[in-house]
Structures are given as structure tokens and as C-alpha cells.
Length: 370
Ligand code: XIL
Image (cartoon, rainbow, N blue to C red; front, side, top):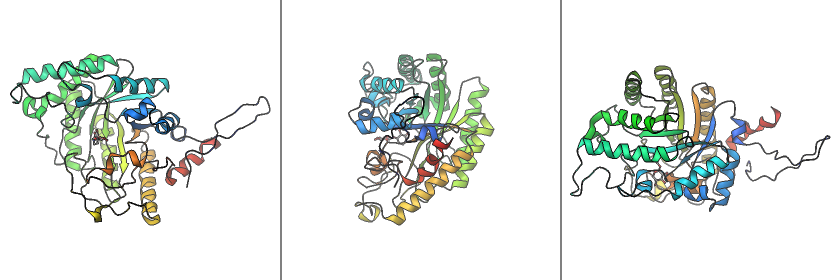
């Protein structure tokens, strides 16, 4: 197995004697292809998780906030923002020269409970919601203006069948909540890149609806730089041909950059192909077969499929500007609790001992030869 924590190798040159870290890194391996991004949590950003912090700094040149910029965390009450964790996240990215992504400005999930309702718990009117969205976006994007380089402006607004999600934002403002969010974000930081982000992007009806929605915004002169394909995968889904069709269609039909924004691949039995956070399935033993470790055949199947997916990303690196992994090590992953609570999953690039997964070896081999 390829070891992430391999010792630093001391290299002497004839002209001078210096220590060079000869261990290749992921960001070097893919430097001609796309940014290598990682979602980090508050412990990794602050350094409380010192190993995770060091791996992020070493292997990745882009970070996204896994949770600390979500509405319920950063804006828990109408007149109260909580900045400590988001500030630490941005500082970490700046100290390491990373391309920093904010996630996410408008999303039905992890939305602060006050955001869509009045004091009686009834949904607010359109003008009130517009004003709340404007304040929220201006305040957060404004605080990190020029520092956070790209924002997931709207997350998960379209369903698999291409219809709009029946979220509070949609019920109150209709389809217009999406262009409004992009408008406010652009006003708050005209230089920031702005993205639409979603899951199940391999679904043809969803693909078409998103292309239509993004092109509609562009025709109105709104800035949309990227389409984020989350990439929460399983050992038997999505169909990679369909996923590839979406990469090509998003780039060719909208002119946007494509970003793989939340890549992970469960090694466990599939119970749902969607990444709808509310779809949870009660834990069952048969759904959690690898509590004591991933057997060799299952690990091989996972590594083979991950290499296939990575090869597909590299093949389309003219269209894909960033590949971001959703979590540091297997133990950190949200997939341990979703869609089934309390499973032991193996979905990320680093295992529970922070060792790099074998499929990456072939990409790293070439780095020092370049
Ligand atoms: C997940 C986080 O990883 C978890 O820690 C949290 O409890 C729930 O949200 N789609 C998204 C991400 O856009 O923000 C979600 O992140 C995973 C699905």
C-alpha cells in the first residue's frame, strides 16, 4: 500500500546540500489537469486535527468548507453571525496559498431555522426573503471579498426529473430565487467566481434542466462561472457513461467550467443512488458488512473504479477546472452516517490511518520524472 506519511527523503545536490521533500503530492500529480481540492472540517482548519491539517497543506491546492459556512452554522440567528470557524478556514487557505471555495450561500438543507419563517413560524413573504438573502449573501461574501475565490451560490435546487425542488426558497420566490442569489453574490464581490452545485448530475432530465437554468441566467447577463457536479458515488453507481455525458454537456452547452465538487465513493452496499441528505435508511447489519476492515476483493473493486473515474476526469481536464474530495480520511467521511447511520465506510483518498489509497500510486509515480 502506498504510504502517505513516507519519510522525507534527504537529497544532496552537487552544487549545494539541501533537504528536498521528494515525496510526490497529489497537487503536483494533477497540476496540468485541474486543482486538487479537499473539504475540510473545523478541526482540520484550526490544526486541532494536526494530521488532517498537514495532509491538506501538503497534497491539496484548494479547500472548501465542509460545514462552517453553511447558514445554520455561520448565521444561526437573524442578527447573529458566528465567524470563528469560517475565519480559521479562510486563514488556513491563505497561509497555504490555496484556492478557497465557500460552500454554500443558498441551500434548503442546514438552513438556519429562522431564515424562511416569521415569529409565528409561517413562511415569510417574498420581499422579506429577498432582503434576508441579500443581507446573508452581502455579509458573508463581503467579509471574505477577494479572499474566497469561488462560491457555491445555490446548492441542490433541481430534482432528478428536472423539476424545481419544493424548498422554502422556491415556494416563496419561485425560480427567481436562483438568479437573485447569483446577482447578490456578484454585487458583494464582483471578482469572485460563482457556481451552481448539485448531485445526481448523471441524470439526463436533471442535466437538461440545469443547462437551461444556467443558460437562462447567462442570457440575462448574470455571472455563472461553474457547474459543480458533487460526485457522491457508489461502487455500482452512477453509470460513468452518463456522468461523462454530463461533464461534456455542461461544458459545451453553457461554456461554464465543470467542477467535481464533493467526490467520494462508498464501498458499501448501495441503498440509494441520490445524495438527498434527508434520505436516510435505518441501519441494518447486512448494510454494514465491513466493520473490521475492507476485504481485499472489495478494496480492489473500489480502487479499480476510482482509477476509472479519475482517468475520466483527467481525460476531460480541458473542461474540469477542479476535483474536490469530500473529506480527508475515511474516518472523517459523512458517508459513515449517510444514507445509513452508523456504518463503517471507506469512501475517501486516505484511509483511517491517513495512508493514501493504492489507486493514486500510478498518478504519483510520474511526478518526479517530469
Ligand atoms: C454534509 C457534511 O459532510 C456533513 O458533515 C453534514 O452533517 C451534512 O452535510 N451535499 C452537500 C454537502 O452539498 O454540503 C453535504 O455535506 C453532503 C451532501
